[in-house]
Image (spheres, rainbow, N blue to C red):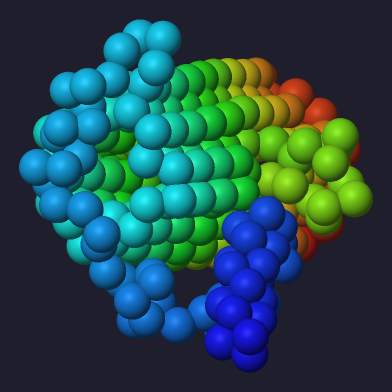
Length: 267
């Protein structure tokens, strides 16, 4: 009975950490990422391939809650797959197809999704600290993941929605966290970055054309040669933000309505 209570408590903690990205950062210190629950795999690549082979357009592969950490699932077609709550820590998903996949509350800490396709994927309350998404395509995806320290070099986020979900404030501020992330050369055209945490992120040579940065936290971030045509800065926090040779700043919206603009570091 005691063991069962401990197990149930652990599962509840994992669920809560996944459900609230803002709170999960503080709770991550209580999660042992080296434990079997977080670091092991209960399926092989062949098992995953079999699940894909038996899937149909009406019944996609269901891998919800599965422990798949550390596997090499590179180049697999997991389009539409249900991976809600799955453990994919340090899993290799290079060149994988995850279009329209459901990755809500999934664990992808230090996962490698280089050049993966995640168009219109649902990545709600996922843990993706230090994940690699270089060259990945997340166009039109819904993302409220914790991507602290992640690499998104050349990542395509055209039309992606990373902004705060104002309908779920009882669960905390649901938004993407990109603190200290590398977004160099990322394409964020028409992306919703409202209230997103971009503190200390590198946005060198990124394209923010028509992106919404309303209320975004940009403290300490580097915006070097970033394209800002039509980008909306209403309420964005620019304390100690480094602005270097911006492109299209005159065409940006509400730049004068940003917070702490007097603390902006122009170079």
